[in-house]
Image (cartoon, rainbow, N blue to C red; front, top):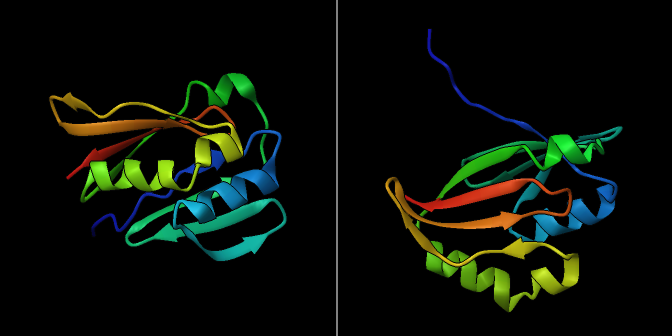
Amino acid sequence: MKFLSLEPFVPSGSNFEGSREFFQELGFHINWEVDGYIGFQRDESRFVLQKFDNVEFAQNFMLSVKVSNVEEFRKSVLEKALPQKYGIRIGQIIQQPYGMEVNIIDIAGVCWHFVEQ
């Protein structure tokens, strides 16, 4: 027996529809949707957006997403003007012991670590 995947439930914050749009603009597509839950996927990365608004929880929740090119990823976020459009924050690319990384704080306050694989 082996584990096949890990799909975290990510809080949407108070703006579920805005979060849906934001993740679609990041390139995720919707696999399924039902009553306050959306299954998102981009390539092999999956998560469930949950209509859940708890600021303290969201601000203490972090995810790590492996990407093939962190510079290209950051550039695409800025070219789409996602920080201005959705009020998200994106950091500078920094070298970490585990690879090059850029962080995004999403609409709900969740910290996404995009790390070059």
